[in-house]
Image (cartoon, rainbow, N blue to C red; front, side, top):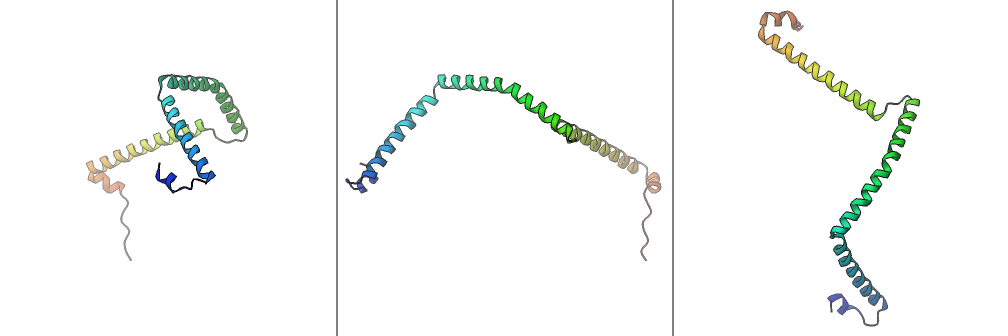
Length: 125
């Protein structure tokens, strides 16, 4: 007997039901672990997942096209438009960084040019 069973009264009907429940849960847990660890279960799960993905593809495309139509009617950007804008801004930022680096290189190469480009320092009063 387990420690819990030893501490229970033999006349406690709730304790007996708890023991039956625990034994049933243990049996189901062992059975399910054995079932889930089989190759047949993995194949069946994979087949159901493939069927679901195949069936949901057209539905997803319909929802996306409807949503993009609604967003365009509301003059709101779609996800693709925001992604394209982010890419364009990234390219602009990279070009600005390149230009900044070239200006820095030119200033280091010619100190005389640097003096003519650099604004004069403000005088303190």
